[in-house]
Length: 285
Image 1 (cartoon, rainbow, N blue to C red):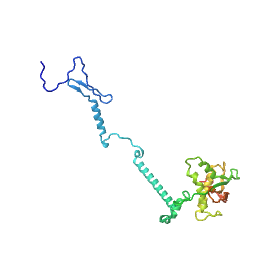
Image 2: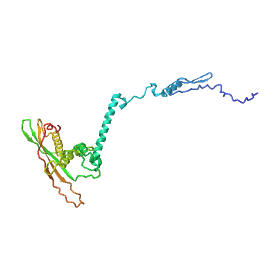
Image 3: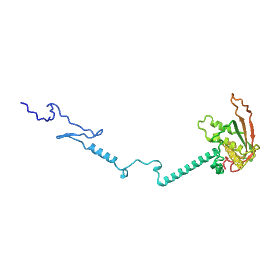
Image 4: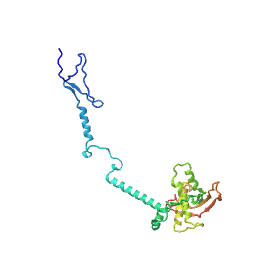
């Protein structure tokens, strides 16, 4: 007869012909396998040990000597080199701030600072950084100005040769045409040098004020460098003197304008300038 129920379910009974399936435990992608023993499955200890080791390494403090990420950039330099790099960056930053401040005071309307330090501002700006516009009143050019130059060259055999006229403005125009990123030198160096000369000379090409001589030497150096770059001197030759002339043509007004402007070119030829010996070979003394 059947036994009475005790109230607690027992383990499920398998048929006699059903094979016993042994449970497996996978640790990682190819970890150890747990084996079933007489008392049940025994967990593998390899995966637990590895996981415990990884957690210990991850939780290790930064100052415990554990290897970290290698340093790069300025941090990889030694202390003296880092101090030197910091000093260089500080000097560059100060120089940039001073230049921007001087340029702003030069182009801005007259104020207390520019009036008090006007001489220092002009010495900083002229001639390399001179600007031809005011911050709140720009004056766009309405003329095409072409600068040409020629030179008397002392040849290697002791003779004197006069070069042809070189159109320096046309050379800059060819360098700019089709160039997506033309340089500041190609766009403005020659034009600003001529504006500087005109502003400091009268109609008879006589200097007015203390900056007249400076503008002449600045324009002369540029001309000698351009002629040397164009190989106008030739082999064994030395520049003895140079001459500059300008050709100014007014930009014609638009068709809808009633303004009447002459488009005939106007030439202005400067006297011959002797070239110092330290500038004769390339324009830089």
